[in-house]
Length: 328
Ligand code: SF4
Image (tube, rainbow, N blue to C red; front, side, top):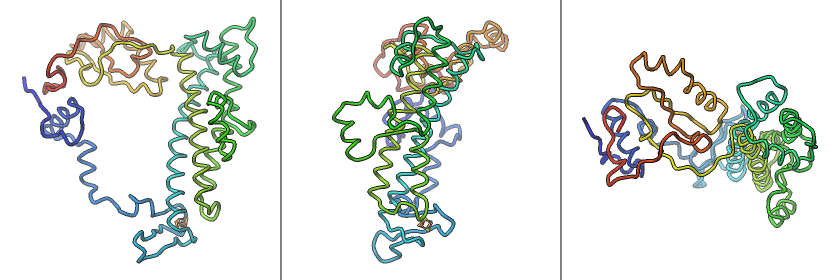
């Protein structure tokens, strides 16, 4: 059995398994992110500093950070404005991604409430009721499905423009909320802040970099106290509230004699269905018919689903060698 130490890859990652797998990839001619990064060298200095812009069709423009070349884009934006716009748009992209993930889960909860799906269900009814109470939704005499539908309908409003403040943001410490009020960055609606960010950073709109960055803060807050929080809360309601569990992580979860499925559990909508499918007797039978011992899931969903057997205690050198077949 070949063992890979990963010794030549210590500068790429601090993780011993990753070092070993980089060595496996190199030996097998598999391209990794590190190879692609190397091929990109030297990366564009203007883009690295954020002083290049291609927001409108008059560009692309770039501002010379050393003062010799152009100091303004065609529209008149200087380096401060261009850097602020670029950063603000990156924040809007990140906040939108997280918040849209929350929207998927929210739509699913609504469908669960409407009885349109039996693939997903309410797992933590107590949390559902607590959240409903937080939103002022009466729960007495209602089924979990009815509460889920009413709560989802109300939370959809968090994405719009009818609220003056995102309801979840009242969980922040009072002193923090006062700072948001004072600086005018209290988040109102999730989609609203993101769209306004794109609007303000378009050519010829907001030409004050402080103003742009303050709204970038509000956009980030709309994700943290809006979209991301909705995603987390509703994932608990539907997939179970996580508890501390002992588990294996990383490449040690792979099994050489199983069908291995590496799950991304960040958005649990798909991975939860795969967990169900992996226990389907028909699919397990099919895996065995093809010569595997079973179906093995690896595994960011373990914090909600637990794991089937106790963790092995790490031994000296554990994680430092990976067999050439990807298992240990
Ligand atoms: S927005 Fe201004 S700096 Fe950016 S590409 Fe257009 S003209 Fe150039």
